[in-house]
Amino acid sequence: MRPARASRGAVEPPGSNEAEWKVVPPDTLTGRHRMRVSRTSITRLSTSLAIAIAFAESARAQPANEARYARATEEDRAIKIETDRLEAVIPRKAPRHWMTGIEKGSFLDKATGFREAGDGLMVVDWLMEPGSDAHWPDEVIAPDGDGVLRYRWYENETDPERRHYAVMAHGTSHRKRMVEGPQLCHRMKPVRPEVIRGRDFVAVRTTYRFEYAAPGRKAGSRWTQLVVFPAGERFFLLMDQVDSVNDSPELFLRNDTPGCIRHEKGDTFSQVYLSYLGGANGLRIPSSEFLAPFPPDAKFGYRRDTNRVPEQFIRAYRLRDPKSGKAGPWLAGLTLEPSVVYEAWCSQRPGGIVVMIEEIHGRPVKAGGSFRAAHVVGYFDTIQEMHRVYDRYKGHTGLAADPAHWELLK
Image (cartoon, rainbow, N blue to C red; front, side, top):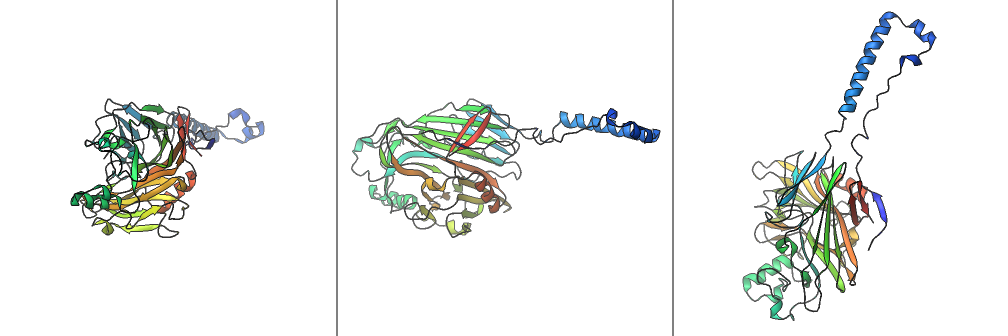
């Protein structure tokens, strides 16, 4: 699948907003004008011209936007990203928590000093589909987490504690199974992402082929994640794409958008915002709603087959300092084409974690087919700002980058 290009997404290059200094040469003055200029005026004019020329040369040597930058430092373990507004880390191996997406604790908003409050951003799991895996033979079980295993579904569990956790984690209304694995965030082997350096952005492209398949399926579907960090912005853009080697009636990729929230009685966040629930203005949920565990299908859930596809799909939480209680920015994930969301939930699991899982596509796929989703993830001061950025980029599902530019694709 290679849709046509839709809209240019690059920010303006450094220097494009520079003030242009135009000094009128003395010989453009008419003789009549020269006769009327006194020596004092000439002296003052010459001084003014000299100052203007010197200032212009200084302005050209030090452009007004020279502080705008985006750079990547490649190290053996990870790639460190820094722009004038953000810092982030993308792991290559030995991650601090998960292997995919933006590494836990590394996403820094330079304007406020806040970092994300979860286990990383845009973390990716398996390729999945609806259906039961109860009939799978015992040999598909992977006790160490590698490969493909039976989904943690309450009907698969006999131990009461495991059964309760399965209900809290995945609910009881929409049974699913794995198609290909491993769960990338847990078990992806070391990778060598491609770093793309542009004039006003830096991008990182990671690809990986799933290594294990469910009974009757093939392994080898390719996952691609492209992340673009533009200079001058408090957000990045990201695309996940899957090129499938299997047929499926409803294939989907599971991820965390923007990411989970670790907390103790709501100490790290004050609110959650979901644009697609609660009417035209979305739904604001106080942190007090997340003090006790509840299943994903109990409240705050979304399914494309039971909900109206919204105009915008935004999920965000308002950070706060756990020590001082100081309010921080919103950290939001904007899925730019709402119709790609198959299911999404925002639920409290046992263990002090709010999960914000999102599943993309969930439609028929044939071997050789592809699907993808594009997102904006970052810091915002207000909900209105999130919506303005959404309107700027809405309707896109793809992302491309080369050293000349980056662009969103439809």
